[in-house]
Image (tube, rainbow, N blue to C red; front, side):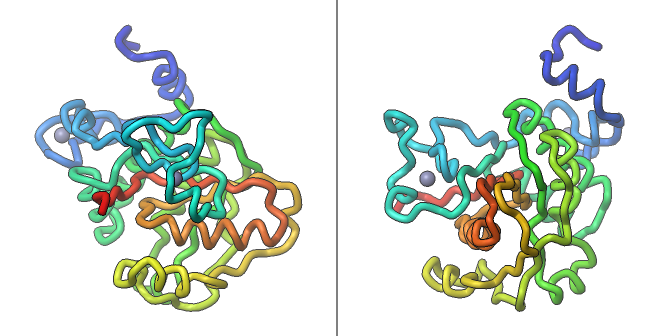
Length: 243
Ligand SMILES: [Zn+2]
Ligand SMILES: [Zn+2]
């Protein structure tokens, strides 16, 4: 084990098998789980200070861990969002390639990036749930891109990987095509959840958080079933320019 590896990294590598593969981004070098050191260094880290609820970067940290203005006006239903990266080049390309190219190696790489972050950050949950896709979307894509992330997260923070605990009730319109108010209307009551979550801590997992409204809608449905705490874990958080 090279001395340069930090403690947590060493622990992670000892726990988890990894593979030296051709870099999935540049194709020129080999690297751990298919990402060379140069491309790994280019990943867009989500840097602080961050809102303790929604992880939006702040110009300055608010005192006493106060949330950002937007969360103060309208608090999301999840308790906290954790994300290692911004949704930006070159990670956005990797995620896109995974979703639409269905290469399993991409999924393993993205899951390892979330695992490294979770190992650093710590956290715990009783249940780990991938954000479900609508049936139609699942049929079209063939798989839920969040499953691999959620399964790996469950192995790191503990908790049972529970992919069948909740589902989309109907085919919601594509969120990306709607404005914020329309997104909320579109999502109200979009998720069904099995009963019996009383007092449990739940982690919900997705590849990307854009407005956070999907995660908030799912968190709200889980809390209605008794979940005590819901944390959202995503690989990448979209950052919108301030208007
Ligand atoms: Zn590379
Ligand atoms: Zn916030």
